[in-house]
Amino acid sequence: MPYRRARVAALVVAVTAGVAAAPLGGGPAAAALGPKWTPVPGAQGPLRDVSVALSGEVWVVGDRSDTGPLSAYWNGSAWTAIPVPGTGDPQDRTDLQAVDAAGPGAVWAVGSVRSAATSVTSTLILRLDRHTWFPVPSPSPSLPGQASVLTDIDMTFAGAGWAVGWTAPTAKSRRPLLLRWTAEEWVEVAPPASAARSAELKSVHVVSADDVWAVGSQVRPDDTVAPLVLHWDGSTWREELVGAAADPSAAEQSLVGVAAGPDGGVWAVGRTCRLAGTALACRALALHRDQGAWRAAATGPATEFTEVVVNGLEVWAVGYAGLTPTFDTEHVEIWDGARFVPEPLGLALQGEPASALTAGAAAPVTGELWVVGWADEAVGGGARAAFRD
Image (cartoon, rainbow, N blue to C red):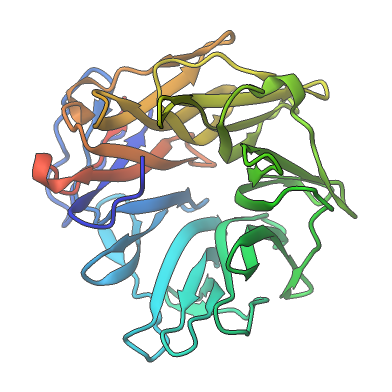
């Protein structure tokens, strides 16, 4: 499902153990619309990413076609928007792709800025200080037509971290972009050598200083799109071959989310597509690394997983599923130990045939699960949220 910029509204869903969130403005708590999920309205959107801080604040970033990039946080009773700094040129284009609330005073956001004057797209990294965003210098291209975009960031409580995305020295080829926060500055680290014609990264997960995972996709010499999995061992990035876990007959397979569990296993999700005539027929893709080997995990009816969240011993996958050949709706599945099975959303989120979940995060203290996304206003949207009791 392409990311829609027009006529979309935010969708925020909180999954909790029984604490109802209040709507914007601190009014009465939202009434439960289903046995497990309750909507929590009030966010603007569409939203691209979510992160929950130790303090309980829920941070989101996204984009509005009328006003540009947005960021906001939920304090338990209301949403508060935080202005995103501009460049001074109203023709420049700023995009926020991801947010990470690593700890007190350590909230980060990443994306890109396209200069209207030079046609250069540069990396953008923002750091929060007293609820104000400040740009942090990061490696970027300088020649007209070049582009570098950051798509995800993961910081540790100790202050280290990684940001990933892609850079395009030419208009026809992308390569992985890997930035490391060290000694209070962002430094580019070289990706492993590859025969791919083009490659990009979508998600990063930091387990420890010598155990970092990044996933995305790569275009092979035969023009097929294959999963890309990279691992940092503390000194070098190396590509992990997923082997038979991926479908060798697929025309396109891509990964957009990665997370590691307390048992040492690693999960990566996205989609796998085959040609059906001249079109692509897609379904969700989930890969699990256990005891050093990657295996495909059985999935439910999801069309694509956009995020995987390891929440204690639970593994959640969020994304969207097809209602018809032309419409999709938000979708959640949970791992039951043998396969991913759909999580019923009740009346809280059903009935929106043009909507999707784009990201998820677990609260580090309470274990609440938050997911965000968008819904088409023309179908009856409006900003929404929900929690699971």
